[in-house]
Image 1 (cartoon, helix red, strand yellow):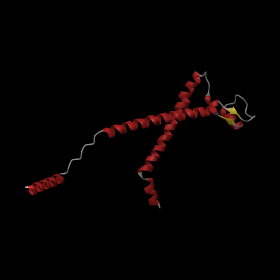
Image 2 (cartoon, one colour):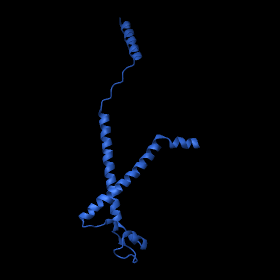
Image 3 (cartoon, one colour):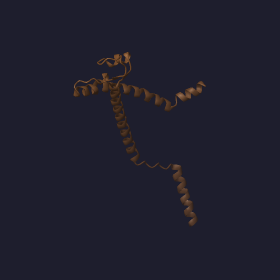
Image 4 (tube, one colour):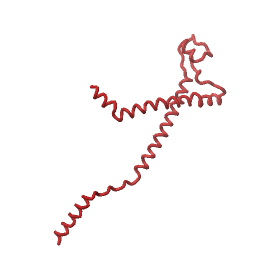
Length: 142
């Protein structure tokens, strides 16, 4: 059973998938920082200093207006649409970057497929056999 697991775990696809997941998680953190620390502050500055992370709709009478979102969540039920907007921007950026990467890979792939493949050189023994065949055929005709 241990040998089977080792075979499974060390197959190329499983290792590639694991590397992809790890890189994806790191990439997600970078995009999250880009959105939180760069894009959302710019959007906030354009809209007059709005902080989207603290936008919510209180669903409980215990939540008082003006409370920070994190504190409001502790007090009662709230709908945090500011967080949703931030995550939607994150998703859009990740989807766009992945689209561009896949598009570039497809472009490289199509260029590679468009290249004419060099014809395989005929081995010497095959050439010799072809010559013998041709000589025998010419001999029969004569």
